[in-house]
Every structure is written in structure tokens, then in C-alpha cells.
Image (cartoon, rainbow, N blue to C red):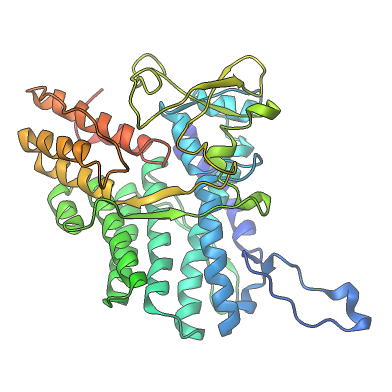
Length: 420
């Protein structure tokens, strides 16, 4: 695990500048008129050079591109590259590899080499999501009369990238930047987990300061920022302040990534890597009691995590258990939750602690009108601090399965609650 969260990051960071120095990937096509003699000089259709965002159209394109880059870095694509959700899920007890690629077998077995190209790509993609969101925020403010809520959304997305850097990587992550005047890449200095969380908190605070309006977009970004801020505060051990941030957020609130099957990058990779049974190419399968101490996700009979077996994985040997909540409608197009009101209720329960925490957890389980339609039986109070801690994190695991929370929670159980 140390290689993935520490050494691999350090060894690949020096090459990250080449990636961050390339043109900015976007999801919007900008083409200038092309004359008859210029057919060899058409613009690259899926990128904008750094100088290309220095106008209102470029700023709007950068905004669209940042949303796409975040979804790609978080969720992955149609089978080429996984994202933070799957890698952290495989590193924890949510998924296991059902294929033959050695780079993925490495991180499932927690025996990672420094030359693991899959994890290098995952780290690069998440770094690109961070840089793209931050640059889009700057471009929108400088060149486009965009609503403040859209600027806030870019700071929110940047904040969430920092959160997952803090949760999924060891202390000592470097953050490269691009010099705004020359475009040159400035190599970052490794910073601690606490410093990474401070950056996340700063981005969410900035978002909250951008807009206090009552439009639907402003309200959405306000809630997203407050949930992100609370998540960072929980990671930093400040449960009371975290609970104060999410007070009043509706339980049925959700900010999701949006996907389509228009092109490879737009697929929901969390679904696609787990749900290619007809082609025999699925890479990851939902786990059950991973490593003996993992949770019984498949066999618990819990409606929040339903994963029936559908054939075999890519290795033509491992059973393929497909997560039902993403296996709906057109394959690869279901949304993935980034921030939810359910997480807000779980943060409040953790801050309350004791018997009140159990009451809060049971209220959420019974709130069928707002919790996604789940009507779950009340949980008995374990009666001990250790038992309540385990119950809280079990509830978090089932409510937020497959959304990139589990690995951070397991690390918190060790760091903050002294569970081994």
C-alpha cells in the first residue's frame, strides 16, 4: 500500500509536469472556419492550448472541460483507465480484480511496483482534474461573465480532488502548477495530508464566498461546498465543525457526475469495468469479506449493495458480481454520487456519538421518502464505544458503496479511532 500512496506518487511526480504542460482537455469542440487551403491546419478537436482560454468562449469551454476531466478522473472510462473510485475500492474491501492485467493485480494484492503504469495514469488524470478545475475558475472570473455559482462549482471540484488526494494517498503528495505568464510547469513540493486537507478547505471556503444567491445553481453549489468542507473537516478530526456545516442540507440532495456513451471518456467507468459480462471483459467484481476482515457486502442481504453474479470476469475464471445500482438503463450512463445529503446525515451522526448516533443512523434508515427509498430495520445499540464505531463505519460503507469513500474511512478507523 505504501507504494501506491507514497513512493509511486513521488517517483511519478517529476514526470507529471509533461502531462500538466500539455493542452487542456475539454469536452467542448471549438473550431474556427477553415479555408480551402487550410485543410491540413484544422484545430485539434478535443483540446485547447493554454492561451486558448484567454477569452470568454475559451473560459466557458474550460468550464465544460473541467466537469468532464473530473468525471473521468473520478469514475474512469469505457475500459481503458479506471478512476479514483475503483482504485480505492479495490485497495479496500469493495472490489476484487477479476482479470489478468498485472498492474491491477498488483494493487488488489497491495504489492505495487514503482513502475505501475495503471496507477501512474490514475494519478495523472486526477491531477489533471485538479488543475483543469482551478484554471477554469480563474478563466471564468477573468474572461466570462459567468454566474458566481459556476465559478464556485469549479472551486468545489478542485476541493474534492484535494480530498481524495488526502484520503487515497500517503502524506507527501506534490502538486505541480503552471506559471500563468510563461506557461512553464513549476514542480510542486510534497506536502502533508493535513496540508492537503487545508487546501481542500480553502477551496470550499472560496466557493462559499462566491455566491449567496437563491438560484437553484447557487443553492446546489452551496450545499456541495458545505458537504465537501464537512468531509475535509471530518478527515481532519473536527467532527463538531463538520456537523455544523451540513446542518439543514436536505437528505435527498445529490451532486452527481453525469455520463453518456457518446465517446469512451464519457462512460461511467465504475459501472463499465464491473459490467461487461456479455463480452467477458469486466475487470473488477464486487467483493465479500475481502481479506477475511472485509465487510460482507454481497451476502448481507442489504438492499443498498446488491450484486448478483453475472458470468465471469475477464480472466474467464473469477465470478463476476455486478453492482446493481449502476447496472440500470443504458450501460455506462448511470450517475455517480459526489456529494449527498445522506453523507450529511452520517457526518451529523458521527459528531453526535453515543446513543444519539445510533438514533440518527436509525432515523436515516427509516427515512424512506428521502434516503432513496430504502426502508431498513432499526439497528440495535452495540452498547460499547468500539461497537458503535464499527457500526457507524459499516453504515457509511453500505450507504456510500462505490463512490470513493471507503478507503478514506478505513484509514480514519485506524488513525482517529485506533481500530486495527
